[in-house]
Image 1: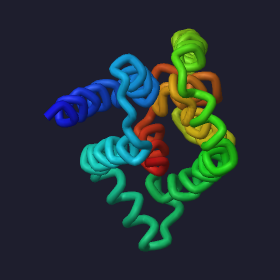
Image 2: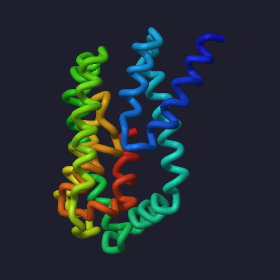
Image 3: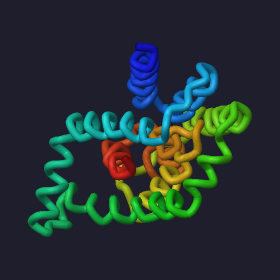
Image 4: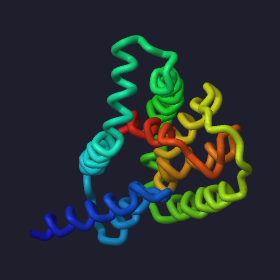
Length: 190
């Protein structure tokens, strides 16, 4: 019964924090530490699978249009142009995760590094409010930067939506109007 309560608490934390530009993984780690839980990494994976399902359902129309464009090898429409950008954005995310994943996981097991990450990336996210209006078009450079940001977001305390949002606003993209493409990029890392 106690494990069920812990699971429900962690599920609620994941559900509430995943959609905000704050780190759900960082919050889960903090609750693991504060409640003296030792949840396996696979449990964190299960929570993120739930998030992936929600992303797929919420963005199903856009994802369908992207997949339809891919099936027709149509790379000229708005959704077809997203395909190579998503691929380009996925490469740095995958490389960072593969190369640094285990080192980051082991380094962020205590409150101090997670707290430092919260403060540092919170300040960066706040600075994104200072951006100027630019373009709504996502370039290969912006896709690469979003991929790097999502790769960095494996650090507990760094938000998977907040880090790309911050880079989104610092790049040539419109800081006040992040596009759905930002969240389409996010779905590939679950």
